[in-house]
Length: 337
Ligand code: KG4
Ligand code: ZN
Image (cartoon, rainbow, N blue to C red):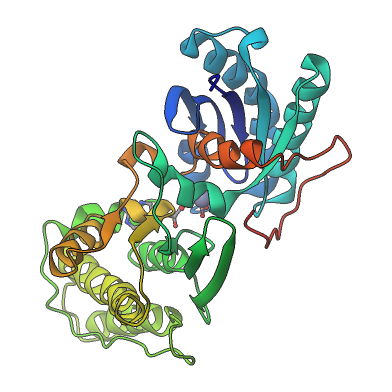
């Protein structure tokens, strides 16, 4: 079979990214222009500024992705882009760039769901995913357990009833007055601390659901109580305590489903998949359930990137699931593929 080379664009939030991916698992180039240093000063993403910076950077990252991959535009077989979910203004820039390229180069265009991209990041430099599969999607906007009976049939079995786990990490980061994004900093700080502060794991309504806002409130109350009592808070211990309980919840609910379902593979997906404790807990599970393959994406493919969009576009390309030039951004995109 001929090689399939897809140029993919991702601009759903605060990363302007472009990647050239061969056959869905070989990354020829992966350019990510992160705006985090800008948004940091405001403690969160400013949507209007994010859109403006995407406009400034999109052509540059596309050019760099082509150059780094050492291919020419003539070598491409399709253009893929993130259609949603994400910020409307941010998404729009990627959509317009992708449609312009597809139209100019007369290539098929493939709209990709961002969450499906995070899941398919597990296939990069790796074997094809095995089904039935359970995916734990953990990002700034999502906390979901998605069961795939096969490549094309899926069901969301659990989700957060309030905050997404990444959102909770970032909000706790704000309470602790540490730099944005809190998730990254809390993970780093935790390495120097112990989970000595008592926090109970919130129990969500619904069998396989998650809840994180009660845990965030526990941190807020703890900080208020310690401040009032004039006791100094050990930030490393606080980070470790919160992280311990938050990750325990993800693992406990995942394990309940692993025991219930007959799966061949379990994958982690989304920005929080970079969390060191979550990764080590998944490694621990892989020792307990030796007949299931456990995987998480390489660190560089956990946070938003376009390589994962190229990986996800490949099975869509093979299935002729193309979009049209009439498609637009879909900020609340639900359908995975
Ligand atoms: O997938 P992502 O890059 O963007 C969304 O699609 O939301 O996820 C971003 C989220 C942020 O909330 C960030 O704090 C969190 O992932 N995150 C982490 C870590 N690295 C990123 N959370 C916990 N531990 C980490 N090491
Ligand atoms: Zn993401």
